[in-house]
Image 1 (cartoon, rainbow, N blue to C red):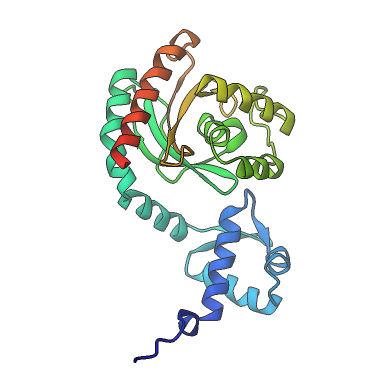
Image 2 (image 1 turned 90 degrees about the vertical axis):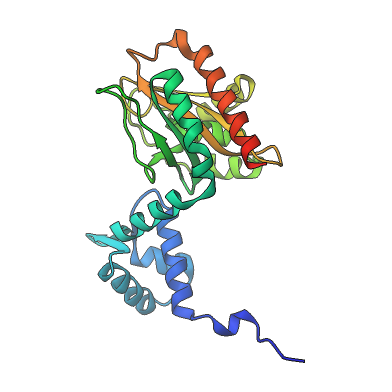
Amino acid sequence: MEFISPMSEYTIPNLKNACRILQLIADSSQPLTMSHIADTLTLPRSTVFRILSTLCEEGWLFREDKSYRMGGALIGLGRKAINSSTINQLARPILKEVTKLTGETSQLAILSGPQVLIVEVEDSPHPLAAHSRPGTGADIHCSASGKVLLAFGSESERTRIVQEIKYTSHTPNTIKNREELEKELVSIQKLGYAIDEQEYHEGIRCIAVPVFDSSNMASYSIGITASTHRFTRRKIKEISQILKNAADQLKESTS
């Protein structure tokens, strides 16, 4: 009988460390210093320095002052991965229909570390519409997609995230603390949708609904982004139903 060595024998320690560093930086809402990275991952600073220098040289990371953040090459790779995924292919015609029915930019999003990440977009035909690109991230506590994914995700993840959020203020309407967010999440669970009431950008209103997986957890969200001039509060009920129908359709497509 042929003996097959454990996969761990074929791994490269410093490549594994580079992957751990990339994941740590990607999960952070702000640039990280070399000392923070070394302490968090319990790695020698000399090792971390060499890895960071290589990643910066190759464009995977960008150094600003004494901190590091994701570089253009890493972001570009992420966008390519997003564009090639099966869920995107299934979501595209559904988002096209949402935009056709609402006249507004629609998007599919997922949770990614401390942010919500847009993975597919169908832009509005309006010349002054809100536009975004796949791969764009937003703070969870002030985005409709982020809040709805928190509300209908796992309880353990929700507890962890609401504790870790920085609660950065973007407008006077931005949720300011954990207590406010937890109160709103209860309301979202009752309504079945979440609203961003000019919390990220003034003059912009968003709405999102959950897309449930086979375990009845929200794995994605479908939402629209529009100016408050066109997307008035009177339209919330109508648009929420359009989005719920779209979410049901996407769930059926992935079952």
